[in-house]
Length: 149
Image 1 (cartoon, rainbow, N blue to C red):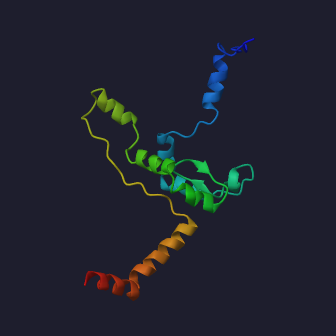
Image 2 (image 1 turned 180 degrees about the horizontal axis):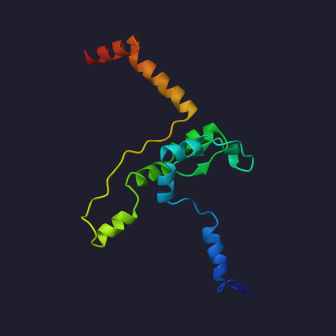
Image 3 (image 1 turned 60 degrees about the vertical axis):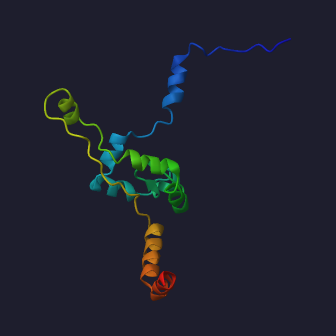
């Protein structure tokens, strides 16, 4: 005998909405507000909160996500998801002034692109300093001079 397919939740649209909005993240305009210096400093230097992953000490400002440890955060910086978010944040978010210009209350202005960099973490600062020291070392210069000759 064939298996009876159960379709009891076909008309339950309230269940679909709950599934759709359960894991909702911040939008780009909300993250743009967080990128301002005073807000960014508060988010990056939060008090210890044991209800949040990693006790709220490892936060990605661009993706609005908490991580368990510093290593997980630095690995996140290398992922495609994070790089895609940085690319999306390059354009200034849509504003009320822009909508008024589109409605004929001003002259049209192209959205400006800005340069967005990944936030600095403690381990990244240390590795960046090590790279600078290696670039300035005389041994490195000798090797590049030998390759040029």
